[in-house]
Image (cartoon, rainbow, N blue to C red; front, side, top):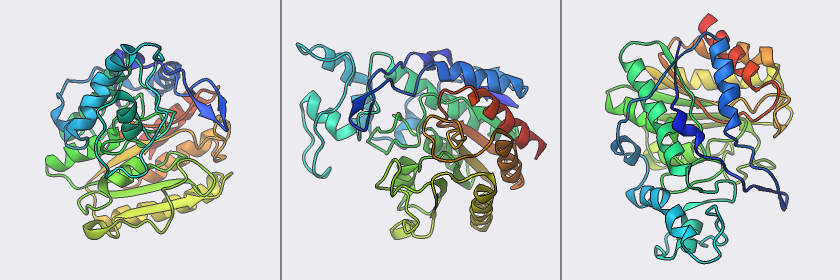
Length: 340
């Protein structure tokens, strides 16, 4: 299996993170790359560098206003007297249909959903090349590769069209799906991260050309809280094209596979001819977020079940945070997918 990654994805090194009111180390660390790379190589992945597709494919998902913000805000922010090293919002609008602010603080509040996505000097570069890695994986699949793994870091599934959040800035899975759609394919996105892919859902919520399916911990008491409930089915033309499968905290392998079967049945009913798999490894029992209790061998079973769709697939890395098991979990998943 080919794997796509660019070393510039290491430049984003976030420091700020607040959980239950306390300032903690940000879990989305560059060291994740080393663990994921180790895991991919152990699964016999052959790494290649991405091609630069430019801003166009990214701007099909994200607004030019938002992309300008991501690219320029840090330089503007640190030029202010007494500014922090990272762009962190301290105010959010009560409604995002209001006028667009000209101040840096106002724009940060408008474009950053929470404080877990601080923007520093290397953030734009890393996010840009993370997206290019996903796009280059799409290229390989369109050229005939059956399955390609994109080591996308920072991740992307919490990013809306003009809103960062949850460690995410550019929605790599959505960008990949849109590129496949442009090539005449019929993509479905399956998100198996322990957190709901709220940004992905929001991007396609009123559309019927991309099916979005997410298996995740019940957001009633788990991030992202306000999205990911079973009743969210899409709106207007998209009604019935979004499928959420929220599961109880602590769900293990057996119950996860039951939900996965329902997800796969929906993808078959959609008639997808290509899959974008938003791969979160944070469903593992030892992940720092402790949402699910999927085991390392369980990831192989999950992967084999998904591979049973018999579709070309772009595997886009999402969550999965630092623990002794992270690389092994990726190895298990990728080997299970190949065997399936």
